[in-house]
Image (cartoon, rainbow, N blue to C red; front, side):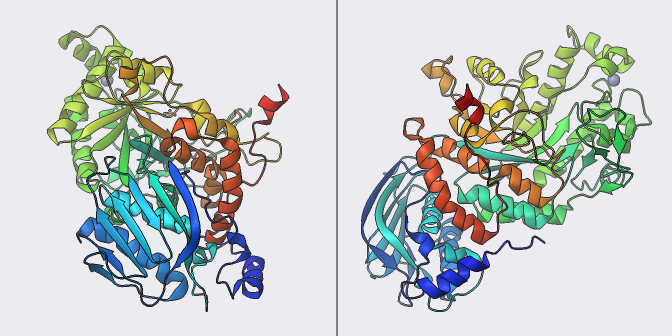
Length: 554
Ligand code: ACM
Ligand code: ZN
């Protein structure tokens, strides 16, 4: 469990100075919203929640009720007030009225009007209602985040009119739990922060060379053997000789835990995309079941970082049966339409020497091992499509030809994304140099070990996922962007937060706010205010230099 980094001084100053108004002194700029809304008209006065308040839905169903219940909880947490959620018409003053309105075209868009009498929310769908509530959360006093009832708190939000919708349909955050894993509570906290900033996807990287982290009932050795490594490299890997800590490391998420996390994500309107890596980055799986490798093993779970030679054998039919069985269990756990199958960094050395792989190349009339990789991915795609799912892979799946309906996640730069968009394939931009949050976020001196490079907040903020090289038709294939956190050097939830925040908020703003309205100065000034909220939540965000000082020096 994370200890709350609760700011006692903040509470004392609130109790002394802020009780009468119900607002602490940290609520001066009451319109600090990240991501910035498309349009915000500030107005006079404020709406105050009271015992008379109701949340009235024009139509109650499971989804709209999630949005309404979430608002009720935001009010209840700091006040103890239980606001009823009812179906009905807009009539009662001092209430929140939520309705679905098809004239709002964007599925995730909403219109939020706050007056002293009423809060009126309209949206195309429940997710838009929920995003309006997330905006309300950012307008509420930071005291709501302290996780306890504050006697005498007057819960007000400033009057305004907001019209809002996202720039991109895909706004995601990735998390690698293969190198290091994080407790269920911290995964939920990560999902909370994704959703607070109106991102809609959590990409959960569940299998790696160094650890297999999801229980698969049919293949228990995946977690029994593949979930554990005998020790872990100390340092970046460049040290000579390499030094290891000598301590076993491991664990995995049970299917019950996965179900719990999926349900939690759904309550926050987050879709989870599970990633099961293939054909490369599969050392842990092959340590468990070496019969699906080219050599037959023995193979050990990796203890250091990098790219490893043992990959799934593309020649053996048994490999595909195994992967289809694994994917079937994964599909049953994750209801979203996408399954990520990795596809990156697959060395071809074993395939070149393997009789089975070479026979496959001959039998299928393939030119080389690159086409064998394409065969592998296309075959898995066929299986996913048969289960009504879609495949995503890293940009190496372009090698040897893209699977017919694959979506490409462009990580080595934007070039893979450009190539895929030109081939009329959907693209998610996650370029290493712009959104890989395991890279140093300031000058490395005095910082915890991180991946080499320099990626300050300002640089993350300046990333535009739509390359100018694409024409207007091709640009339509860019679904959005995703920030990635690889966990080689991130071995605790506290360090996770330090690396991710506030850079994730910049990614959220790029995903939501129109590029023409993005403004780093405005973002920074809102961030200074919003930080009080993160302090109250207890987020261990990075507090150093946010500007790109190397660019300033040049
Ligand atoms: C990756 O960073 N290898 C996708
Ligand atoms: Zn083989």
